[in-house]
Image 1 (tube, one colour):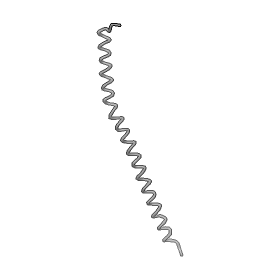
Image 2 (tube, one colour; image 1 turned 180 degrees about the vertical axis):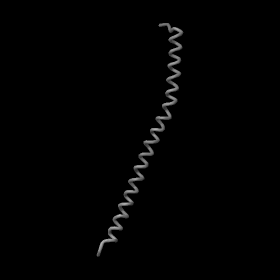
Image 3 (tube, helix red, strand yellow; image 1 turned 60 degrees about the vertical axis):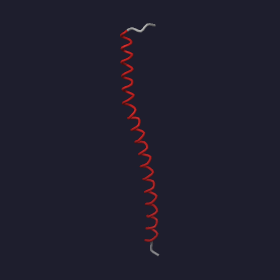
Image 4 (spheres, one colour; image 1 turned 180 degrees about the horizontal axis):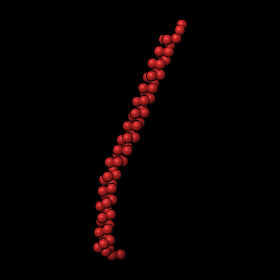
Length: 67
């Protein structure tokens, strides 16, 4: 099938738009991955703090019990 000048121009325009969308989309995907990684790290930090708090809480409760 022979390609007309209009269809060739349309295809080239579509390709240019597609490339620009990929350029815009890639940083967004990377940003989303970074947010997910930060959320995982944040969760780990909260778990560590929670464990430390529970340890301190047990020590305080043990030392404040009436003997």
